Length: 185
Image (cartoon, rainbow, N blue to C red):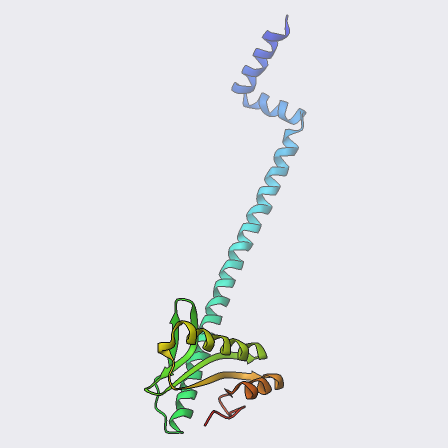
């Protein structure tokens, strides 16, 4: 008997006889390989499930951060409006969103505008960012500025360096309970 008819018979049996196919697979180690693949599939599916859980958790955290951020911005606008009213200034404060610029606190009347940032913990960088935003507003959107511009940062906590930077740059830095720097006259 030549090799060709034997090959043909073996291939036919592999296609048609499942028990024979598994016996041959076992002899050449495919069973071990299949078991390893099954184990990898199981571990892979566990990882996929963990990723789903992490995505859900990230979504909850993101939602919480967004709610908290909006809440502190709303608080900042309310407290700032109250402080302005106590000085005889009535302004409607909101955020200002332009194509290339977003300002957390903005309000204007005929001759005064308030431009501000809100941060839970204010560092020197936020004072610099506010000044950069005012400069950009002046260059690109001068119609939003008025004769007098008051720069303000509302925070829950500020470092001593931030307070000093705010004083030097004429920024009204305040918390809910106190003014950390004095507003411009």
